[in-house]
Length: 211
Image (cartoon, rainbow, N blue to C red; front, side):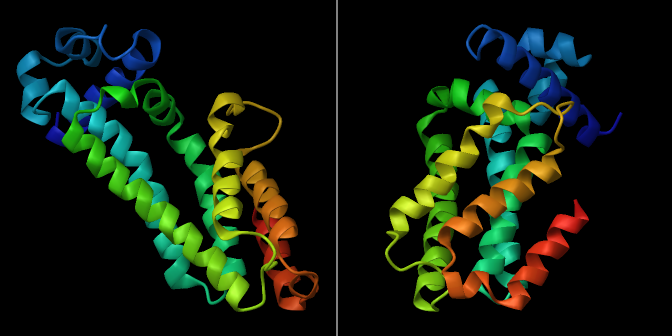
């Protein structure tokens, strides 16, 4: 078994145990047993249970941040960037649902250094959202009467709650849900003139067709 696969098995076992029992109730011995490894194998991959908790948190925050930065580099307009950023944010809940659940349950137990590292990435993501919304207003695409902080935090608040109700075997796929959320956001924030642009109508239709 490679070190990478061992680390993955440990992480997956810890996710299940933390989600079911809470961080403090789970020992390294329990994680090692559940993952089919050893205590030595655990400490070969993680310095401590704290580092494991940090890794769980860091994985999905890094994913959404990377996707937002990728959208910013790939697309030409704030509308397209925001649309893809919203979709990738929602898609994350299918890929990292246990990670997000553990984050909300156990984030208070992160040590100060680890917490600051996570906070730094979360702040970067928030700043990117603020930046895209402001650029959309400046370029006449987004409604200028909507305050940037409230608009941005409203988007975060709407999407963050997804982890509470999303089921992978539900009626709608995560791709469909992502497109619905993006549609909500764009029809709320775009100016009437921007909504009527043919290039945006084609862009949104293309992404709806992909799902």
